[in-house]
Structures are given as C-alpha cells and as structure tokens.
Image 1 (cartoon, rainbow, N blue to C red):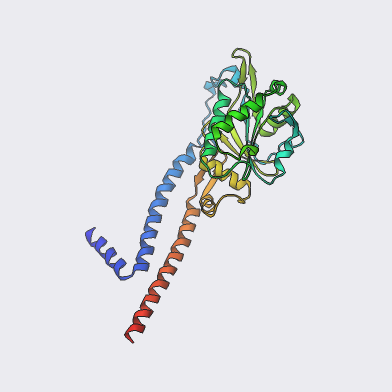
Image 2: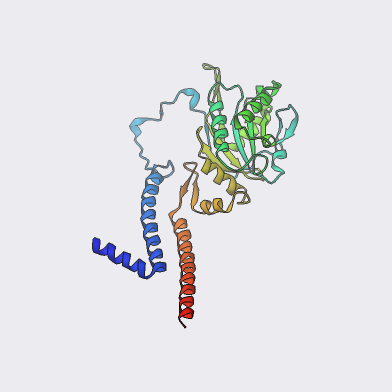
Amino acid sequence: MNSICSKVYGFIRRCPAEGFALLLTLFTVHYSLFTAHAQKNEHYNSPLYSPKYYDPSLGVSNGLPNALKEVGIEQRLGEQLPLEAVFKNEKGEPVKLSEYFRNGRPAVLALVYYECPMLCNQVLNGMTGTLKGISLEPGKDFDVIAVSFDARENEKPGLAENKKASYMERYNRKGTENGWHFLTGDQASVDAITKAVGFSYKWDEKSNQFAHASAIMVVTPDGKLSRYFYGIDYSPKDVKFGLMESADKKIGGVSDQLLLYCYHYDPSTGKYGFQVLSALRLTAIATLLGMGVMGFVFWRRNKKAVNSKS
C-alpha cells in the first residue's frame, strides 16, 4: 500500500497536470459510487417503485378514520388552473386568477383555510420558512398564492387581509408584499381550483373542521401545475429548483443552474434527487478544462525557462 502511495506521489510531482486529473477522477468515481448506493435505497423506498404484495386476507380496510378516507391530493402535473375563476383578494376586491399569471413569473400555490385550527397554519408556516431560506424574492422572481377552500370565508371581510399581515410580519422581507396574495372564493371557484389541483377535502362534523391533506404546489407562468411538495416541511433546495424549472430556468444564478443540471424531480416522492450521470458529465468537463488550463500554464513556464537559458 505504501509503495502504491509513493508511486502516485512521485507521478504527481513529475506530472502535476496529469496527477491532478488522476486525483479528481478517483474522487469522482468514489463519490459517484457512494451516491449511487444512496440513490438506490431512496429509489426503492419511493411509493412508485417499492414492491407491492397483495394479500386477500387483509381485506380492503386501511385503518383510516372515515373522515380521512375521502381526502387526499392527486398529482395532476401539467393541469391548467381555472384562470377565469373569480376570487376576492385580501382587500375584498374581485379578481380573476389569471391576474396573477400575466407577469411571466411562476407561483407557489397553497390550498388552506384561514380559520383552520392546526394543519393549515403549519402548511403556511413551513412554506414561509422555506421561502425565507432561498434567495429568490416574491414579487420579483415568483408569486405566492394562498387560496381558502372554505367558501364561507369569502363572506368574512378582513380575514384574508389579517392572515396576509401576519405572514408578512413572519416573512420579514420589505418590498415583497406585492408578491403575496391571500384569496377567498365562492363554492364554484373553490370547486374549480381544487378539482384542477386534485385536492380532495371533507367537512368532519365530529371535529367541526375540514379533513384535508397538506402540500404546496409550484405553478408555471402560464398557470399549469408543475411540482407538488407534500407535508408541512419543504426543502428550500427543492422549492427553489421547482421554481427555476417552472420559469424555464429564467431565474436563479449560474451556480444554481449548474446544480439544477445534477438534480431530477421525482413525482413519486415530491423531491429532487441527485443524478450521478449528469454529475459525472459536469465533472468530466471540469476535468478537461482543468487539464487544459494547467497544461497551458506549464507550457508557458517551460517556454519561459527555455528562452531564459538561450
């Protein structure tokens, strides 16, 4: 082992450019093997690919309460939002949904209801915390649209306005207020947007509240559903990549674009996973560029040394 290390060291000293390329290649291979192993485990834990077994003796019961059997979120990627549907903004003014898709920006969409005692606040809190963790700004790079799916809130003046004020204080970035929108609508408008999103909910008489699932969605500048992120805790990296892809890579810096090249959205998990092949391509390009630069530097040095001797 010592003799191998000494030979590698000697090779690097004799040929720095080739030695650098060798070390970079060994590191890349080691890292890609490690990442491929990690990807494999995550891949088969995905609901889309995990093995499924059918046992007739188990019946059809899944143990869920009745109120939860009819709720959920069905991904409808590419589905067009009902842009002609009319809602009220936080000031109580009627506005078509299309008003928020005339600026060429993508949007983050959250279906909640403002008097929800628990889950909806967690969705909005998680979304706000995530957006604080990315460099993109509402009103400049994207919009945030919260829509109440409780049609009764359409007749409660000030409710959406107060909700917006509380989250503007929580977000705490001045100048972004025009990028946040808190809407309410009548039952027809609510039905139109929840159907398009694939959002199913149900009123539960026992708890006196709506039973529903939790997620935020990313929508393209022309109002089509692009990404779903489930739960109440959303990765800033995933949301940022989702916005960048939905905007056709017109937002975000060069470094963000390079990172996005190495990640791929998995609809079954609602997350971005590392792509080994893309990373290897970038590494190969970086290696060739590095070898070229170092070769040029050493060529210049050798030329100067020859000229000085002559």
